[in-house]
Amino acid sequence: MHSDKEGKGGTATPIAESDSEIEHEPGEKNVSRQMSESSLYTTEDEEEDETHNKIELGPQCTLKEQFEKDKDDESLRRWKEQLLGSVDINAVGESLDPDVKILSLEIKSPGRPDIVLPIPEDGKPQCPWFTLKEGSKYSLKFSFLVTNNIVTGLKYTNTVWKTGLKVDSTKQMIGAFSPQSEPYTHEMPEDTTPSGMFARGSYSARTKFLDDDNKCYLEINYTFDIKKEWLAT
Image (tube, rainbow, N blue to C red; front, side):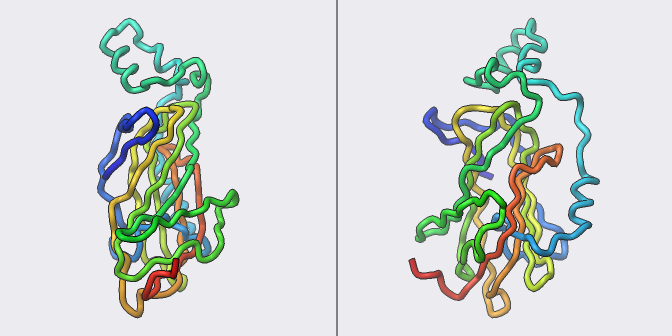
């Protein structure tokens, strides 16, 4: 998984990065690992799984409290300074809850212009949100801003349905990130759209960006099409 931060200050890696493998539920046909748009076919089981798998963490601390802990330990102090970089502790150190804002979403495909996806405030873009050519390679790239406090266990989930049946479910852990003024960028591993008569058509999907507490920073419910050819640009 390529996960780094691009900005005016150069590149930086997240505080912690989890296994880069993408998880898929067994028995499901791999149709699309796209930014999940699935909306209309939400299942109670899916919501229950998220609640059941919630990790119980220890007491929360503000960024300032975390920074001041063990301040007499020189090695720990230097390590924290390296993690937090140029973060202004006085500006963000009094907030317990981190905030993550997804700034941009785009689909990249070799030899094609990037498909920039508008992010609607209500999480329901126009239908279809985008169209992909069958059998084409693509990847999802997004940028996000972290403020207030360190976000841990930031992850991306995507579920896809076709004619009411769930055909793909994806989860990828992105990592932990400290607050900073410049956005992070992350690009998902390249994938290939399915092909053939039965693969073409309209899909519904749901994408979520969540953290360890299952706090959802963005949920998008949308539809997309897979066609025989790209749309004319």
